[in-house]
Image 1 (cartoon, rainbow, N blue to C red):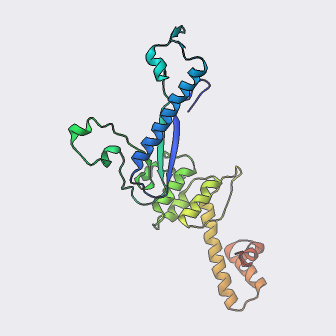
Image 2: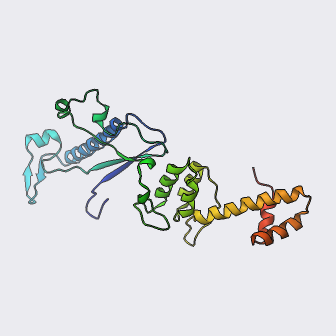
Image 3: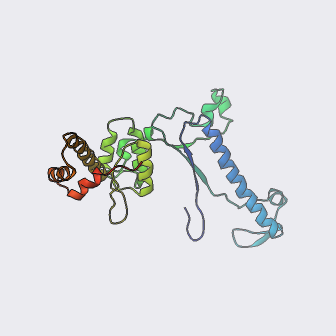
Length: 253
């Protein structure tokens, strides 16, 4: 987050396709390295300017103290907060530690009081409540295709995943690609005027196509000619003859 004057937060994302049982250590290392980099950048900038003077909060130029000179970081300097989000793209419950304290071999509160803890910020589908997902009927906490992706992952091994598609809001093309790959559920690409994918309508049309293709195979086994098949099914499913003929064409491998 930033405006014309400052950056408020540095946000990082750690994507996980598998559960990582040492994630608190790795995230703490990444964040620590980022803070160290900020300190080093400050040191380098002061070194370029002679590293002997600084401007205090009142705008007065004063000489550095020996502590500031040795630190390379001035008394009034501040770091930009670093937030790392761990996104787990799995349907299983995350059973790995959420903090450094959970990874330690001791649980003595007197000892732990001297050990700084570090907790990860985890986004895992199984931990997200259904009320947090955005659907066509309600507003949730997610307002992009990422929320739909998380919901599909959560239910991908259940029959209810079909309901997710039928109630899904519009998603961007990239999200639709990932959703189809992860869920192994096929749907036709139907786009609105802004280029967003309507997965609900796409699922409905895919279901219709599957029924038409099944009927095509049945009628072919009855030795009905292709034109008769196309005409009959166009009337039955309320689609055009050309639409049926397109489904009758051999699929590209």
